[in-house]
Structure formats: structure tokens, C-alpha cells
Image (cartoon, rainbow, N blue to C red):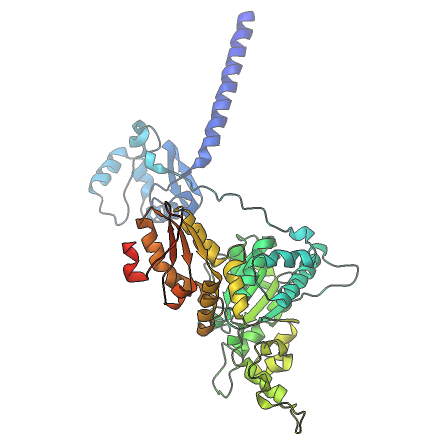
Length: 498
């Protein structure tokens, strides 16, 4: 009896060991995914696999194609006749069909090596966001974080901080008693390069909410060539990894909103102007929208899902060119005659004229009243002055100068810009009249020779960009590692001789 108990204990131990081994095997399985034996597509692309004897995997598409082909012939007797099957395998002329003997694979050790491929590594965990949308901080704390990345635009940052605070407080609480809080969508108006898109990107990164940035120029009325209005929501769904609950708390930024203004003095159908504004009304207010999953347009092959836009914050931005002229016309109507009269050219040199915009000015520009009514917050951004451009160069956390200093630090070279050089760069950017976008273009131009020549000489330890170099009157100052006195270096053609 004791021997039997010992044998049973040994068998139980073996079973436990086998289970442990099986568990270890199961833990290793996720590293690999099955590949279809017919079309060679992995499971991540082909979908669910059919597992046949001897470790053969066939995808759903190939299995259905094979069965459709087989069903055209009288295969009942063929499969029961091995001799006939072998002859057919040798001499078959059936189009797109061949017989496969799975028994031939029994001696190959089961599944071939090419039947498994390694899965792609999952994305690393994201950095913890600055804010938690379920415990949103006060507006002054949101603005303080925006100050680290965005220079100037104090009023715009204050408006956006309050709007986001109220919006996500509304999302977290749902309704307060019987009072339902309405959504506060934002309309941002400012000249090109003033930071409209950058402000929204920074805000979404701090909040770690899905953000979809789309362009209004591609939107058309339903039934015409172009993107449907619902495509802006499908982009947000894609940004949220098709998580509907997460997407319904996201932010949609529609850029170039001024391009869908009503066309003036035209008799043709306005499919990309007023019609788009009318189609966006329910979207901005809050409605259940059917959007395609994984595609930008609806068709029979794409599954649809329903997204509620009630808790999605819409931010529309545009440069609104020639808006200053409309504002001037309104202000000049108030001029009078006499010694205290306002001159007609009083507003010509006002850099912040855009901040005086009103809803009537926007209506005259071509925006319909119903559309403006669903964007209750109008936020204007100032044009960038020379001092603001200098601050943009050096103050933000990811300033342009800090990026180049980090690049040269990898070559163990210190890079400095003197104040005269910063103002020279800002002057050139003001001439281009494209806002902060001009700064990188100018610096790229002047840093090209330096970035090309410095890796040649390991003795260079310190480079200082001067205002004369930016203005084309001299060269940068470099310091050799073994020397303490800096040298003035000629420009471009003589740069390599140092």
C-alpha cells in the first residue's frame, strides 16, 4: 500500500511539474503570433486563425476561399480515395486549387519555424501627465504651466485656462442638481505664427487627453468630394485608440476656420463654406454622431460607432486675414469733425487692432450667426513684437536655442548667442511677417555652416554667435580648448581654415 501511495505522490508531482511547464510555455506564447499557412499574413493583420492538426494555422479569409473552391467539386469520394488523391495532386489542372496531404508534415516536427513570428513590442508606458482631468487644478495653476512653454499671450492663456477648468469640472460632475452646465467652446483669432496651434498642443499634452487637430479647408458638405464633417470626430476617436469613453472627453482643434466663411458675390453652390458651418452646428452643441472606425469616410466595409460630442471641447482657430480692414471701417464710422476728431489713419499702425474684434465683425467676414452662437468664448492673440520673439528664442522649456545647444553639447561644444545676435534674428523674423515660424528658418540658415564645420575639428570647445555674423558683417567667435582667448572667425569661405 505504501508503495502505491508513493507512486501516486510521484505521479501527482509529475503532473504538477507538467502543469508548471505548461504555464511557463503559456507565458512565452505571447511573444509570438501565428502566421497563416496560405497567405503568410500574421494574426495581427489577418485576424482570428483556424488551428488545424499538426500545428497548421489558416486565417478566416483563406479558409473560406478554400471551402468555396472545394464546394464546386464532388470531394466526398475524392477524400475517401487516397490513390485518387495522390494522382490528382500530381496531375491536377483545377484552377486555384491543389490538394494538400497534412500527413506529410507529421515528421517535420510539427509547426514550421516560419509559422510563428515575434510580436511587436508594446508601446512603453506614457509619462505621467501634469494634471488629472478628474481632479483638475485651479486656472492659475494651468496658466502657470502654460507660461513654461508659451511666451506672452497673457489674456489668451487666462481665457483658455478658465474655459478648460470649467469644461472638465463639468465633465467630472455631470450635472449639478437640476442645473445643467453648457459647454464653452472657444474661437481663437490671431495672426499667423502667433501660437494658436502650439497653445492647444501644449494644453492637451499637460492634460493627457486625446487631441485631434484637423483642417477646415478639406471639409465639404455631405455628398461631395472631400472630408465629411463627421471626420473630425473620427480623427479624435483614432487619437484615443478607438476608446469611445476616452474620446468623448477629448479636445478637437479645427484650424483654418476662417476658410469656411460664406463666399461673397457668387451664384454657385457653396459646398465648402456656409454649408460646412451649418453642418457643424449640432456637432458643436452636442449630438450623437455615427463615425467610421479606422477610416475617414463611411462605406459598407467600415464598421460604424456612435460618439456623443456633448463633452468634447471644440476649439476653432483662424488667422482671419483682412479682418483689420473690417474693424477699421467700423471704428472710422465714429469719426467726427473738429479739433478733437479722430483721424482716419489713427488705427493704421495699431498692432493690437485684432483684439477689438466683435461678433458683428465676424458676421461681416462671412461667419453665420448660428455658428458664432455655439462658440461663446472669443479669444484673440496678439501679433508678436520684437521683444516677444527674443523671449521665444530663449525662454520656453523647449526653446529653439536650447535645442541647438543640446545638439552641440553632444559633440562637447558649448554654444552661446549674445543679445545682439538675438535681436538681429528677431529683426529678420519681423521682416518675414510669418510670426514665430520665421525664427527656426533664420537660425537654420545661419547654423548650417557651423553644424557642418564643428565636427571636423575636435579642438573647438566654445562657439558664440554674434550680431555681426547674423547681419553678414563678421563671423562667429570660437574658443579652442587649449586657448583661453577667443578668436573672431571669418564667414563661410574662410571658416574651414581655422
